[in-house]
Image 1: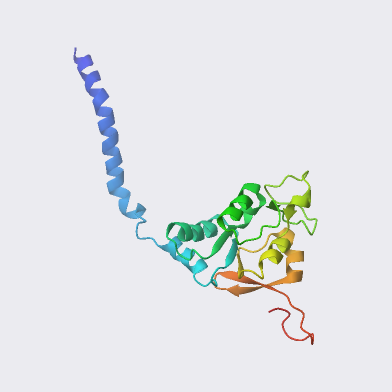
Image 2: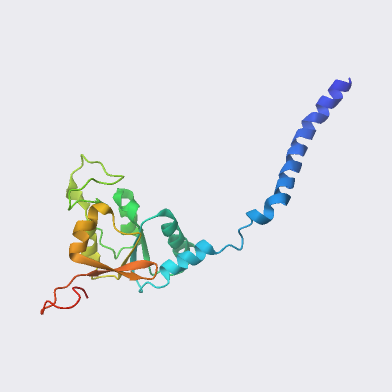
Length: 196
């Protein structure tokens, strides 16, 4: 009889004990786990977007960089004029379709971005090597299609596969946390900086 009494109370005691343990952990560790006043990522996102020219395109490498900028743009409507593109996602057809829909002014010169298309270097993630390159575009082709239409920036750098060709036609100048991409222009006298 006594055993059945304890078994009945044990069924109620286990959940109650679990709740008490959770509340004790919460009380002991709340202060060190509370990040409600931590604005580091928010401020970082603002530091990415704030110095950009109006109606700019920024091509971003890295989840933290891209997520901070996109959160502010889409959730807080901060710098909603800036078009934020994730460089790693440009290799996917679905992402390029979304860019065409979300930013109708951007010219996407193919189905997807293929790092190294012009250099012949090894492709990077999300790309099937058996597929024809006719539907793909290089970073140079993307820049050429848009650089006269929008101020362009990059954060996190170009893919290694694109280095040789991108820097033949463009220069990258520090601009806040990111860098401004400018087209090289030949000077008639051959002197001075080769960009505008």
